[in-house]
Length: 150
Image (cartoon, rainbow, N blue to C red; front, side):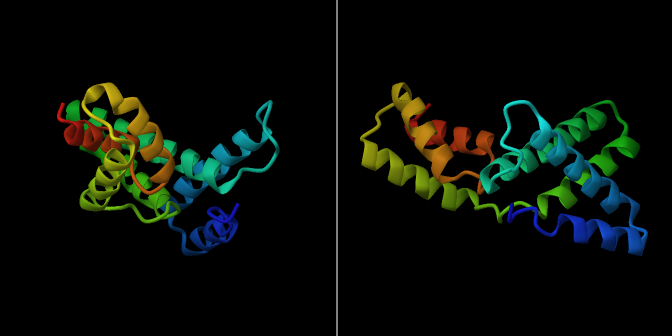
């Protein structure tokens, strides 16, 4: 669990510095990790890949909540959600830029000979595996659609 190896130490540091926002975010991560590790059918230990997916899900939940709060004209509720998303995102690997993701997708399309939207599933599967943790799934899908001419 290399991605989350410093989680306990980060929680202690947040407690010492009385950073409530960071502490709340870190405790949310720890809670989600414990729930995943103790869920039925789990091996009891999260792999790095599973941890990254978990962190991405937590960030997405916070961003979605913030967007809903902004739509309802509630910036007082949106700002803490966005701040928590930023704290959680610090545990994720560095995200690739749109240009870097587009280059990987173009390479995959040329290597598979994909033509048009009928091959989107094939390209998405390979792109999702290759870019796991480095780019958001929605961003990958949008760039694949754009590259395939949708």
